Length: 305
Image (tube, rainbow, N blue to C red):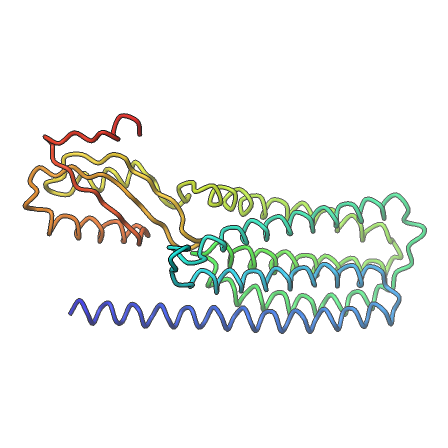
């Protein structure tokens, strides 16, 4: 029965990986096609705004590629030199993705402020902007929807999702500004909406950046409470103490733990250790190394840790 459950879990996990891989590839193709269309319309209409937005969307295609690479690396196998494979690189890529989002925010803010200071020099084709940005809403919104279901348990997928959600907001803002410009000729609306969008992106990116920084220096993932973990382990029958506890991320989706566990009776070890590992796995900690001790064998490392 245990073997059947393990096989079903592995099959479900494999299906999930294949699904996410397909989502990333489709998202990259769709967004690259939109960049080409937006660039073409921008050149044809002479719209610097559309060309700038095309450049921004190209950076998002790059971010999706990074997320795909991170996803592939997170499934890599161990080697002699890299005993966890290349999974940790997925954390570094999530940090890079967050930095790219912040750079995009900076570019939007600088460009918007520059436009506000010299609105009279800007000539915009409101209709061309609105129609092209409308296509952007469909492409970016559909991509965000594809990633939405997958982003809950992986910081890289969440980063890609935030990129696409931010771009959907950008496109919606550009549509509104294009319509207002067409109807009223008030060009200053364009940079104002740009600033508002940049603030929204900044707020959504800040959590991603802080979480990526934490993971990159092996901090305990936010979803795990170390005190609660110790309490749960101590509740196990026969466990009298847990110390020398370390919890860290192997990748953006996997967590490891090492701990010293004091057992009242070593004869209970064959049953207690697997039960502890199962309990930890229920908390999302899949890689556990537990060193067993007895009450009359004091741990030399306990005091220093």
